[in-house]
Length: 148
Image (tube, rainbow, N blue to C red; front, side, top):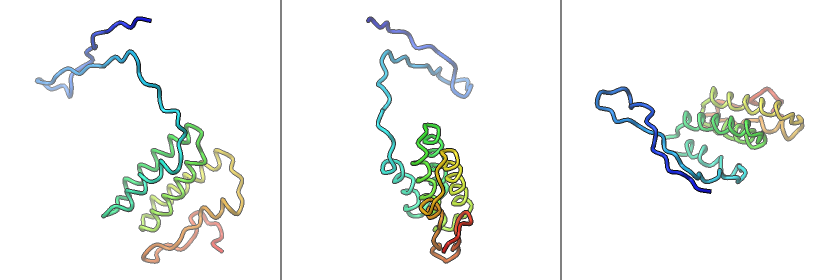
């Protein structure tokens, strides 16, 4: 099969500036296939948690990265990994006193559990138990399960 080279097609100018340079689309006759390696918790969670273990911690970035990662996982039907990421990051955010972000991720994790029809048992209830933060400010369960 013979592939013909094409000239890049101009599609506009950057920012509409008078001195701007036209940008183009690039035609790749052969793109490498997308990675077919399945996602794992070990490859996805550490970059998110790195935002929380940096000095100073960056809870906003961790929260946004967790939301984006779990949305993509859920769209690809990897609910189990999305749930685990939501709950783990939620716990870490709660430890830092980031109640709003922590609770949002916990509720999102619950939503993924409903979407994937996970049975509620002692193990899944235990996923939502939160420990007290460093300042002792949070000592209840995230969703209202009995903390025992």
